[in-house]
Amino acid sequence: MKIIIIPGDGIGPETMAVTTRVLEAASARFKLNLELRHEIAGHQSLEKYGSTVTTALLEKVKAANGLMLGPMATYDFKDESKGEINPSKFFRKELDLFANIRPARTYPNVPTCVNPFDLAVVRENTEGFYADRNIESGNSEMLITPDVVISLRRITRNCCERIAKAAFELAMTRKKHVTIVHKANVLKIGDGMFIDICRQVGVQYPQVVIDDFIVDAMMAHVVRAPQRFDTIVTTNMFGDILSDLTAELSGSLGLGGSLNAGERYAMGQAAHGSAPDIAGKDIANPFSLIVSSSMLLNWHGQNKGLMQFCDASKAIEHCMGELIASGETTGDIGGKLGTKAVGDAFIKRFNTH
Ligand code: NAD
Image (tube, rainbow, N blue to C red):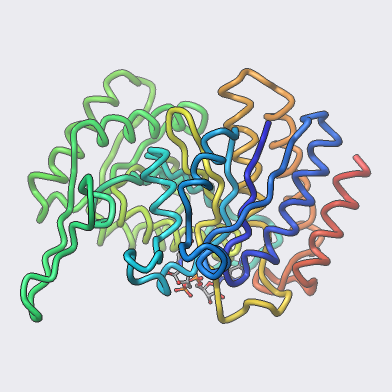
């Protein structure tokens, strides 16, 4: 399995360095024969090549079996004509990574303000309120006059169907409960269609219980009782927001891993951003990216029928659980270790099994 590794901006190089060590250790222990190719995107690429991402990089990613993308300083990238392209959008759109799976769960030793829970947000990744990916060429956010902006939201039957299917498939491996999150009381046509299609797809999964919540009320429900939820399917922006909330409720945004998956390609990526407020301080939690790498290995194993990849994924998450239980973590989840030291502790424990 060839994986392209892109450290990203801010805390990315620190957390990706630890994640790379974890992947190398998993490769050695489970004989995965991983080939890790190091590339750049974001600020580093903008300085070197005049663009945050390049078509040459895209070709390399297409020729590989997976991508680990570090967090990007997306907010800094304002003008595509100057090479300031949002790398997350670029890969999600170019590789058609329509399903953004963002698990969140509590751990016994991590302080939280909620009851224990274990859920996954399945977020549509290629349309919705994200105007930068809704039309073939250019951006569907338009400055009509200096005082008027129109941003187009796109909802299509095809994208609703495929994200719904991804959610029900995932629910079948979990507690068989899908919650549809929407704003169909206001966005009656678009989100009305989203709900209808999710429920139609759900007919093929009679074992799965289905309910739905309006997105604003969902915020209250998920804070009040996150243990009520299992698999949550929703459109792009609602899923982006909700999944930061669920990651933080689990103890820290630094636990928020994710997989962006399509039919042919997949990209592991932390749910959070480049965290400039803590960059370079050796305090960022690497677990979000480690979980993401584990999800990428599992995706590959499932797709290719290679169980050693699924076993490696389980072992990584098991080891992470043990570290958390013993308090060998960064400060955001109650530990006293730096980012690098968490990496050392992980490798030591992982290799002694
Ligand atoms: P952020 O997600 O980077 O940070 C939010 C808060 O969470 C900060 O207090 C940060 O210190 C903390 N945090 C994030 N990751 C952490 C970790 N691993 N360990 C411990 N604490 C962690 O959000 P922001 O500050 O609003 O955005 C910074 C930049 O990231 C912006 O340019 C934004 O556009 C970009 N961004 C990128 C992505 C992505 O690449 N997928 C996602 C979200 C935001």
